[in-house]
Length: 147
Image 1 (tube, rainbow, N blue to C red):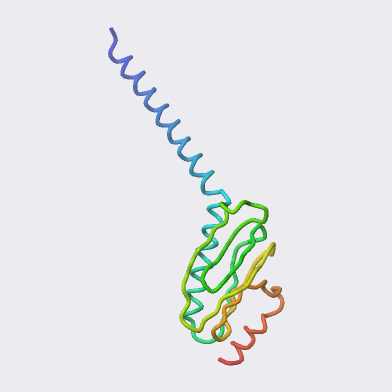
Image 2: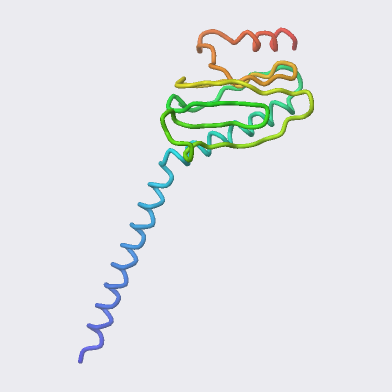
């Protein structure tokens, strides 16, 4: 019996099994990473962090979300952000809670727009569609004039 042939065959079999396993893991991971649920979770967490940042920013400010969000609908309230795709069931909506300091308000609804802005004016945070790239938002002009 040739032991060298058996060990070579076992090594080839092990390499094939490792390659198949690696392919399976990467294909599952890529499907998960490209799913709409993950995108909604990321966007909701980003908005939550943007609200926290605006609260800590002195004066008025405007922040534009850098990605394309035309598929999604957003509902911002003083205690949460809700991100979903119109027509999906309730179980697919992503809801993230946050708390605002006393006196602050957050509100706004947006559906099917390419981008959105969060605007802080005094103690109000508003979710709205951004102005076009050629013109500066009115509140941003106020910031520049104030400084």
